[in-house]
Length: 413
Image 1 (cartoon, rainbow, N blue to C red):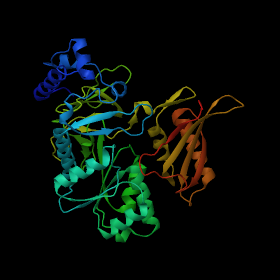
Image 2 (tube, rainbow, N blue to C red):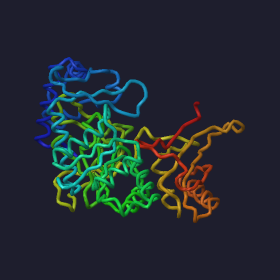
Image 3 (cartoon, rainbow, N blue to C red):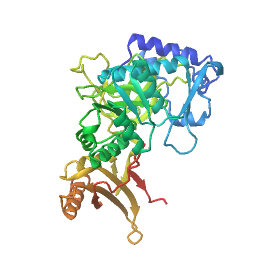
Image 4 (cartoon, rainbow, N blue to C red):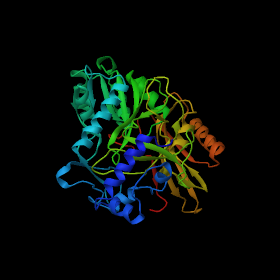
């Protein structure tokens, strides 16, 4: 994916604005002699931006406007060390709401819908983004936030919510509770807009079948507005992203070289019109590919494939590099195995060898010992690693209201 003339013009405008400021990137670009972006070659000379840059510039070193123009800040979640703080201007807030409205519309959601918002509010970008887009659309916002499942279900039934917005982990928890309590016939949900974390096809089918709804993947990250810069459509063939607000390229995560459309790598995002904290060539660590061609839905917006994982989610065991998504792929091959799993990397104190522990849930109708052997054999065949597999009943592993931590490395503890 290469920049269009319009996108080049917008990047050039961002650079010229940034170098007039004393922001982190303004100083950096001046030091590097970057003064304009008139061609793809100029763009390729812009260094990648990273979350480490943002932490180094804490708290507001990346702010590129006067304080009087900042109307809100947000902060990334789930990280250790210094948080990342992102300032927003009024235009940034409005642009984000416009993109979010587009997401709802692409999912077929209208002003007649009642949108049940469970993602968190506060410094996290999720809840307030879902609400702003809902209000701009003209639909009814039900701003629940996370937690208090009892209250969630009561309001869902009483207010006849038609759209559920949630992380995949919390959507799973709610779907299980609705099934357990026999409430499916009392809810009015038709659609689910799910984001914040990647999820397996097995989890998707579990939620879809339990609730009887259509599901849509929404994409975004705090550094780049938040959720809402892209969403899947009814074709379920990738995530449309709004290329009038962001430019996306795919790079080899090791070499940093741009990859052609269709090849998988790391998503790198450039904000084209963001004011408060513009980011050029920001490395997200999310892994995907740009899908060539036009979607059958007719949308002119380009598409990312589903997010397969993160480059920094990789773990190494017995010299083999693995991602959680690879473990999910073999679990999907075993009859009766649920969508939930946990991975623990440990060290055997006697043999001094690393051990891969996998705990999976399975339905009561299957033989747990045989299921354990099947998972272990598949892992050995596919990856050359034999794990220790524990099989537990469906519902045994803890559920999360936010993101689920699936890998725990105890080797350095």
